[in-house]
Image 1 (tube, rainbow, N blue to C red):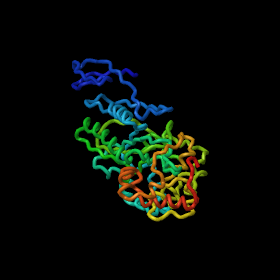
Image 2: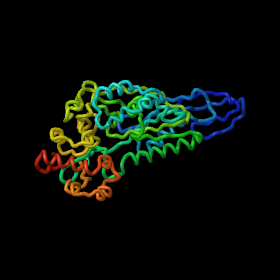
Image 3: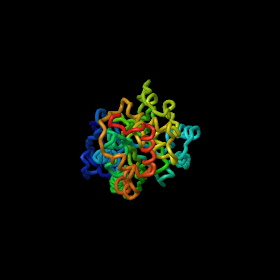
Image 4: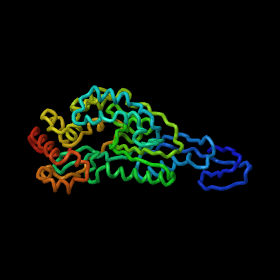
Length: 367
């Protein structure tokens, strides 16, 4: 704790407790200012930085970021950071990537480059971009007969877009209560913004060789959320965390389809996550052989990452026989509000049928 002295003018001075008082003008008083933890406190690693107000202000904006962090952690977020809406640090790399790689059915990533370059265009008067990380299970969801899907699908919960948007709106409400004139926008894979770049810039993690954001002390099994706000408040100074992959190439070596060609270089057309979810066509047999028992998504490059902790699979999906016999109405009832809705029933049936055809038998859990 640091002690500073200020001379009271005509303004109110608030103590660290947040209780305002009106001392006699001209009186010299002692004010204690505590260091603020601006970023996060997560499992095994606590990173702290200092945020000191440049001057005593009528509005306690210097304390607001700390309060916002505390609220985010209470909602279940594991990391929160702040950055200014400038051109993203990795924008040029992103443009180079989309121009060199075949994007297939996700060519929409090439659109709105002006917005990706200038995020201020996403919200008029934008002042701060808040980056948040929210965890998903380290256990892989499986069917009773041994098939599995990517961890992020969380099949027993509502689609993460809906859940996280709701949590983001709670933080927006907190912001607008303090800054009534401000406006906010929540982004969960729903806007042309380079979320991993801003998350990295805000200091909550670093981008690994598998292109995933890795949060120190937790790993990469997490969703990213951005809150854009016009509120004006002091934010902690931050710098990107240095890449900690060093000489490790486990993610590249373990990519079943060879889509991860080199550090930070993904060939979308070969990626099993793309092929089993976004690709409008049918997965070919060669790719199906590399899918193993996973019919939706792929976590291979994350499973081998030393920063992640994997847990035993959990049976939380209908059996493949049930999925294959589903009608649209059944699918809507059982899985229509989950992440599987994006691919749709037809795609799920195609993927499962291909695995069965390639392997010629039903698989057992763990294989």
